[in-house]
Length: 471
Image (cartoon, rainbow, N blue to C red; front, side):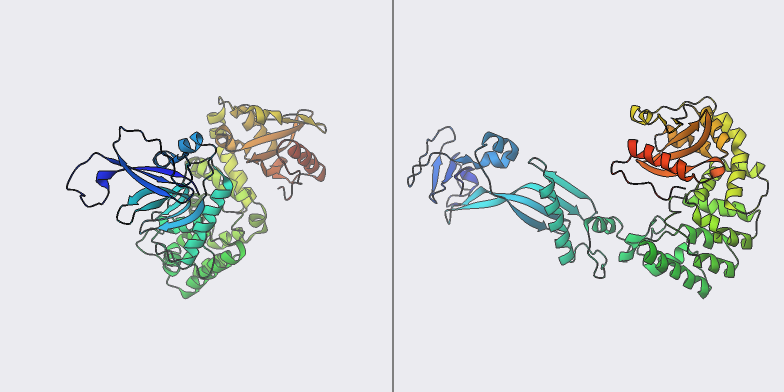
């Protein structure tokens, strides 16, 4: 037990003459660790040298100081060890998981009792608007924060809080809770697994009417069934639902049979999740001007479309770079991903060369460290738009289209040369290999892959794991 001294304003305490007279007195309460308590009424200007009558203790810690600033109080009393415990407090607007200590705060004259209150030193609060806030007065400790999260999560799971949709027996975590509080119009728990909810901005929405909305309110039962099956299949296979292709197909394909077949395709949605949604819709509109819906079905059914993670994404990016130039210069080619991609690159070549010609690229010292000689290869970084453009020409790919991303340090492309001849290039983002290829987007040979792996481990990979599935 800690010995405390608590100073209170006598005129603010309930007593026989409360609100009838003003005394300007204070009450100094001494709570000794021996169990004895003294209440002494005195004038603020007087200084008492109190000694406990029972045990003659003279050391009492200032409770008022602890309430004002717990950090300063503990710094001034390094010999003191407070006891702490975890607590949960909730009201209509917030739920707070707290790490508290109990400190004297008030006195009850009628019963001559000291009233202790909780002083939070750490708190984690979830508000009804979905905001999750951390506050701590003491030095940050991950262990305490982790326990606060665990306690708050457990409380939310055991109590019906803020009208969050029923999780159907699944454990609700704080990220999920925050998501539904920020999107209170979403009334089904499975919306948490939707990759995009931007279109679902209605008063209240459930899965069935959301699927109708993204599929353009189809009348044919076969389309409704295919959309629902697409949704279930994606959740089962990926644990996530990406509506991009469902929306693009439903908005642009008029033949019911072809649309149903497209919706039933088991596309690698996770592989295509980084494709610009509006760009996907626009490129399908453009392709429909040159190809039949049956040809588009074959296009999306092709092994080429599903086997190359980045080729279609790059084709969409090329199209969005300058749609008007492509529309004016496009020459109808075979309706295949690689062929269309290369045609877009051809259409943009002159425009891109003009835009990139005099622009430079700047890298960090860390980026430059990877430019070395290894296994007869010289690793280089393009230092200008012109150099990137020329190297893209050498490899016959769309590498030049990454200029803005490289310039904005969103990604980086290293090029591997042998005797001044560009052999292959690799894109690195967030210390991971995104893609690597040789001329005409060819896969690397076994030896080239070995060179890349050894170089990558040296500069980017901490765990020394082999690169797999490099395309």
